[in-house]
Amino acid sequence: VPALTTFLAAAGEALLALASPPRCASCDARVSGNTVFCPPCARSVERAPRESDGVFLWGGALAKAIARFKYEDATHLARPLSELLRHARTRDFAPAPTLVVPVPLHPRRLAERGFNQAALLARPLARDLGAALALHVLVRTKDTARQAALERSARLVNLEGAFRARRRLDGHHVLLVDDVCTTGATLRACAGELTRVGATVRNLVLAVSL
Ligand SMILES: [Zn+2]
Image (cartoon, rainbow, N blue to C red; front, side, top):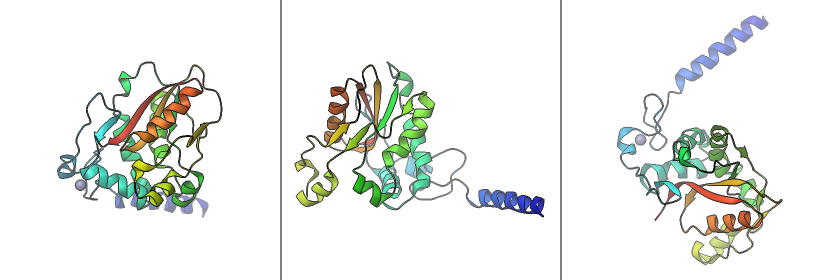
């Protein structure tokens, strides 16, 4: 009986795999192979300029996929979205990152959402780069998202002292990862704190609005 149970479980898994073919991260259309977006959606995704911190420009199918990922609990999109990040110019990174640090969420926000989208994106990237994923080295001490809602403008939010490093990082080359960058203020605040504790910092953001 255990053998039969095992067999049925395996068959069930195979069926489940058949039942969930790859789909476009934005519109859910069936896609072939390892592509993240269907062809029409892919045409709406633009590369960011090389000198920017971003891999792609914010907008189109990518913006929709990120919104689904963050706000509609579509955590299965972590894998295809991190694929996009992984194929960024990581081979050009010199010196090679020793630590990958996702921009942290405030603990209250993390509890609400249940996951940190930047951390989900950063994990496969760290593995690829052979760098350590540092999830707790940087903490967010101000709930700026809540402040932004109160101020009705993210631009008015004061990020000074919003992030705190928990230890020295002398000699470390940090790759700071986030999903979206609009004003760059968050990245600057994080990088400032990481630099203060001795690290060199380089940013990598999936979608940047310029
Ligand atoms: Zn699509």
